[in-house]
Length: 118
Image 1 (cartoon, helix red, strand yellow):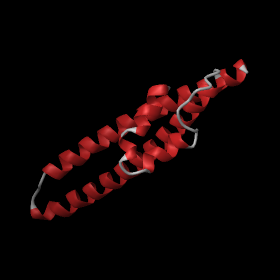
Image 2 (tube, helix red, strand yellow):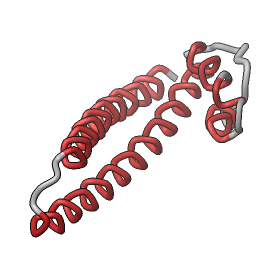
Image 3 (cartoon, one colour):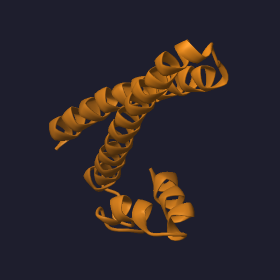
Image 4 (cartoon, helix red, strand yellow):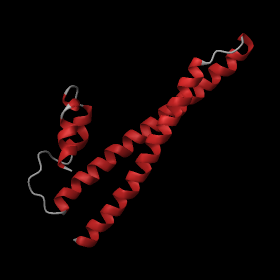
C-alpha cells in the first residue's frame, strides 16, 4: 500500500507544480491583457491592438480552463489519498470533491470544507 501511496504522492506533486506554473501564466496573461486594454494607440494602430487583445484573451481562456481542470484533478486525487492513508471519516464522497464546485451558492462553502480536510 505504501508504494502505491508514494506513487500517488509523486503524481500529485507533479500536478501541483504544473498547477502553480499555470496559475503564474494566468497571472502574466492577465497583466498583459490589462496593459493592452489600457493602451490606446493611433487609429491606424487600433486594429493591431484589438488583434493583440483578442489573442491575449483567447490565450487567457485556454490557460484558465487548463488550470481549472488541473485543479479539479489534483483536488480529487488528493482527497482520494485520505482513504489511502487510513482516514475513514471524510465528510463527502470523492465525487463530491468535484461536483460541489459546480453547485451554485454551495460552491462558496463546500469546496473549502473539503479542502480543509486535506
